[in-house]
Amino acid sequence: MKIEQRRWSEEMGWESKPLEPTQWGETVQLVLIFGDRLLLAKQELLDIIKTAYPNAYLLGCSTAGEIYDTEVSDEALVVTAVEFERTQIKGTCVNLLDVNNSFEIGEKLARSLESDGLVHVFLLSEGIKINGSDLVRGITQHLPKGVTVTGGLSGDGANFQETSVLWRDRPHSDAVVALGLYGKHLKVGYGSWGGWDPFGPERIVTHSEGNILYKLDGKSALGLYKQYLGAFAKELPASGLLFPLSLRIESKDMPVVRTILGVDEAKQSMTFAGDVPEGSTVRLMKANFDRLVDGAIEAAEKSYGVNGSTAPDLAILISCVGRKLVLKQRIEEEVEGVREVMGDKTILTGFYSYGEISPFEEGVRCELHNQTMTITTLRED
Image (cartoon, rainbow, N blue to C red):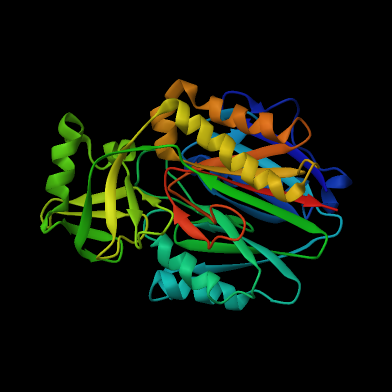
């Protein structure tokens, strides 16, 4: 696997040297592009990338921050070109407006991918209008046994207004894209971990519809949430990123984390990135700086494990915008922690998201997560 990585910003332009066509660029099959939503819509930048890599799939999304090696930037484009030696790729895209619900979108994506030789699916989705839990259920239920799924929901800074997914030649505001990776020589690792501390009592979800939460213990969920947030309540939904919910459907389940995407004062409800089923148990969480960084390292160690003693060629890091808002100037510490685990040979790319898609670790079912660091590693043997 051969990889080239570049970054563009208004201030710096193309860092180190201009991105220009090369003979090697013609053999690149995949270009990952993560960046600011407005930059992602600049056709002149996409034209430069397409000219440099004329035969590649262009795949990416808008972000709440871009990861370029161990640096975290805003208002930039990070471009990672990949030439696989023994792996084939095929992609498919579904428009949200063409399908009834998020589960059916997942179903349609899975059925659109050729199953023979499929090893892994990398998924990028619109970040606000999608029900990520249903999307994950839909795609995983219709993939061949043993095929894994990772990915994330696109971001829009801390604005939560509009996100986009880049597919082939342009960004789409209502799209979900699945990239299938094929071949027995590809080794895929994955891991997802948080690092938040629970506080307050556990409460039962007594009224919800999909990813919309109305009541906890028979009381207004929004009212209870505001009570705990105190002064932060007036800054909802953005302040909800600092106080996510831990959720368990069954007592034996590994808790998943849910982040608020919006609030409805009239209905006294909160909309989350994934399902909050009735009967499930939830608990508020708050940040612990050191544990957030440790969580990123834990995710790196889990994703590295499949490679044994050999470092992966590429690591795609998808971390939550909530972690970025909490860690602030310390945000690069979590990426530096990943670098320490991966070593110097692994190329790091990725973005800050509105939701992360991955199993916690090998052998565990795929879930939509919030407030985690999720890592996908790729290596060819």
